[in-house]
Image (cartoon, rainbow, N blue to C red):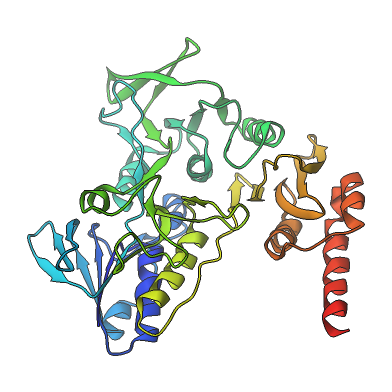
Length: 421
């Protein structure tokens, strides 16, 4: 068998390793568009703070990791697929045949429609090349404007704060990390950042960026003010890399459309990771979950199904985000925003920056979000993923959500007792 994996991020790497495990004699090629060895974008913040060097971002540390497993790594960009003859074309003009193909091309930063966004000194923080440029400009005492306070923006925010820059954050929504935190908790993160010396503008857009001489930039805000900066970082979201997949005739929507086996509209092609519109565990609907745990799970399932004689259904991934913002850990799981007709419970301690929100459907926990309560992260995920019936514990948790550990232990014990009865 000839397997080709397009994409050398976490999904691509895990998929090639799973393919080799299940098919020891196959020919496996992984194609990645960047010049570096396969690396993790989630490790870039550690590079920015000098906790690791570039090699520390590599997904596999041994120099001959892929060669020792007889996995060919090709540093080219895939440009098109000839689905009629099972051939992949790369930008060097080479044609590669495949029996099964996995598309794990990930996502790319969205470029906001801001005049001057292409000015020197304006960068994304998505690739190692981006990170190198940021390290050059984000010297201690430098003025930095960060556009976007979503999940990716807040990861970058911490790294910048640790570089001791004068940091200003501009976020369009009315709170920070709006896709994982509600108004209360999102604004608690904002107040935490402000206490740490970060200036945060919410409900604010960058209207334009202009060069003012001496390498300086001036960012005009929708509120009427301006901020001068040595560096502007754009972190306003990402979009799946669908280009060559859709151009090749594969069915796409928000991402590449797949079935319960992560198989695309072409029987010999599969998709995984940020580019894949996979099943959501809670809703059963298909959406793009651009997080690394989902990418890794997709990769294992897709690779397994690519191998003859193996078949495993993708049951869906729990939407999960865990974020450390200058020492304040936030987390959200599942349907953290609640469900129609559901019930909820909330604990708010603004002084100590502690927050817990539980969302129920009948007597099952379907979503949760927390702030400053790291001891509950595993329990919240476990209850949601197991769809455990809480029984009387739901009403107890509505009165006091901090009893979540008691509820977990009690309900888990009752399940064990029922199973052994």
